[in-house]
Length: 335
Ligand SMILES: [Zn+2]
Image (cartoon, rainbow, N blue to C red):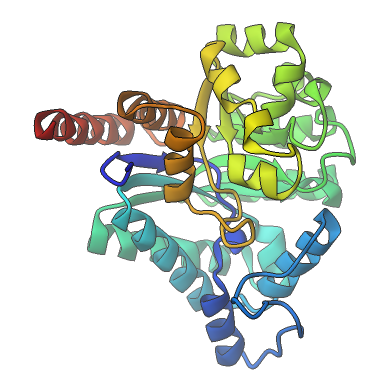
């Protein structure tokens, strides 16, 4: 079992963390009628291909509309992760999604920040925010999100990222947005090498000031890229459950997590949009052990990589790493 392993997560989309229970609660609270067939008889999100997944995601997101909803969603997710040994979670927050629900940048941010504060007080887990732009909404909107993310000066906003449809626009088209974010002191990551192949990862690491890649698993198709990632210490936010659910790989045997790790690439584990992909952070760690053969020390090392690659300030990172040392020390003594 991996329950005792201290964990950290760098790849989690806020709306994608909403369980059916929460979505129903928000819908009632906001007087919204959910789409028929959003959940199946076993209370799981219903979808069978990428387009249906996006529809399902949007259908659930429609119920999340207020600052209070974002606060409750954040609190709920973080306290659940604290129960399974997570020390730290970085959350992708999309102001553009919140805007579609009628929420301002500040209300959305304050909601998530309230949830983070409450969760830390109650369970000790630390959460931070990566503001994300949506690739298919284009570079102009991305520049605005980057500028707002820097200007807000909120201590919980530590990073800037990009999700959305990888096949639209080039990574380079978002250079200006990323430059604003990086110059403003935010850590940077982007989704690449998930749907698209290795070239998308090359584009990201050569054209944008990123130190991490969301997914990046298809880098395995290019040995030169794998070598470059290892050499440059670029960290991959790997989400195996998501990759299998979205058929990036047919099964876990074909998934390159272990091969990337063995080639010296720094990897972390994330759940992406957990209830949609019928996974959790705990399940990702457990699977890494059961299917990919990582032992306790290696899993703790993966958590260490996540903390080292996190976008928190130097002091906070040092505190988190000290906590990890202390907890993994306990594990060793407990034998
Ligand atoms: Zn993602």
